[in-house]
Image (cartoon, rainbow, N blue to C red; front, side, top):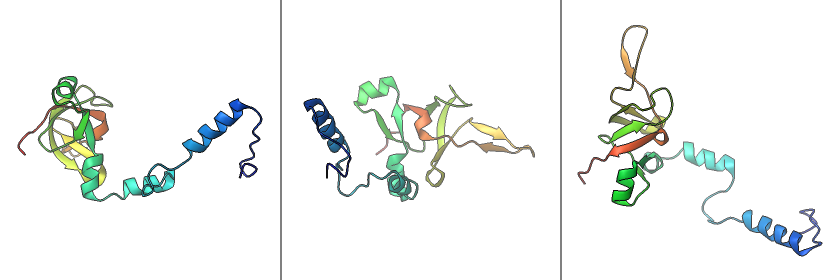
Length: 137
């Protein structure tokens, strides 16, 4: 097996390196693939109930200290602030969570079409910070 890896153990230092290499390539969870191709396929073909969990956004500093949680799945009436991109520093209420496209629509984050119609711009949840949570459940 060592020859298959083309690795010759000569000193204790190289043995430690070999063991670190061996442990880093071992799988941690048997049911989850460590192959990048399969991980991407699982991500982009995820069903809606798993997409809700994946589409989480970080909480603001105040909410983080209050609830002791770093991020939560985003919901419809949460108030968020965009932190990246063309609409940076723009805040508003989430009007739609578009799970199929992995995007959220926010009030006042819109674009004008050529015909004059206003359409919402999709923002990825990782690019926003939740400033106020809708609590009803």
